[in-house]
Figure 1 (cartoon, protein in one colour):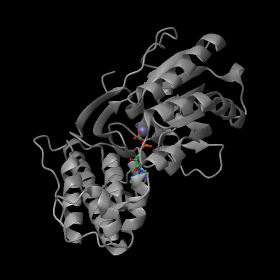
Figure 2 (cartoon, rainbow, N blue to C red):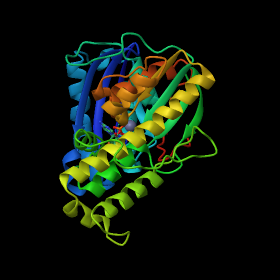
Figure 3 (cartoon, rainbow, N blue to C red):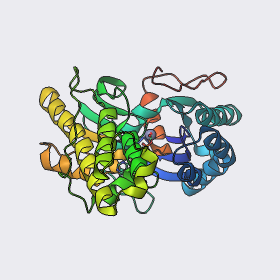
Length: 352
Ligand code: KG4
Ligand code: ZN
């Protein structure tokens, strides 16, 4: 069962072929990250235009790398949301056209749910991937930490899950990106903060962890504001100093201090929540998914405190990719009927 997975919800156009929901045969990426870096964030219009240019070559390359052809593709899966409407439309319209032209079943996939399925890929024909040895067992606790989402989800089985908590404001990846901007570090903020944090003291600044009525909900906007206030204080200014003036006034040592303290606090928020859920729900496996799962400090704190060894996949499959869409579709098609290729729509938010 070979599924072609197409992902275009943000600024990367990605296509992958996955066999039987677990064997990664290709993962081809085209990205408009140069523009994203130049503007310090995704510009939706530029991202959508870049998807138009890349999507067909990316799909062709994904089939070629997988050493397969349309005759041997059994289904097409595409991200239907959440994400940027213009970006999603290019992926969905391309997938719909291909499903009609090539006469293949089509599956519209929830991007956040799909991040979890990256952890079900256990084999590959590609070099340079470190994958989990075994797929996760149910009940499974999943922490999804990306630039757009922060959710703690308890899966009883495929497609049968309960969202225990989620962010009330910024996603954790978004907080990394915003703090990087305050410090004048390049986009994407996650890796930049992680690098700057290496030479800083994680306990150097005392930063707050939000306490919410649902202990599994998250909030990162207060932490981001606390970082801003602490940075202004470090350069001897008050809250009236515009954040755009901070990068030139903070020394490299001060930037490392702020980065390390912020990273350690953000990570501790996630780790505390996961440990609490583990005690309450006693899952058989824990998976960490999404771009922030690449964070080494998160992996270190989890390995040090969790009674169960968490499952992570290769860093290339933590960030957005087509393989997670194809893997999710393999299990979804056992529950849901295929989508109508003449009408499948897109969703910017989580209401799918
Ligand atoms: O999953 P992803 O590729 O896209 C979304 O669905 O949002 O996640 C991107 C996010 C960005 O906010 C980026 O800063 C963050 O993941 N990220 C990291 C690291 N690598 C990427 N955050 C912390 N540490 C990292 N090493
Ligand atoms: Zn994502």
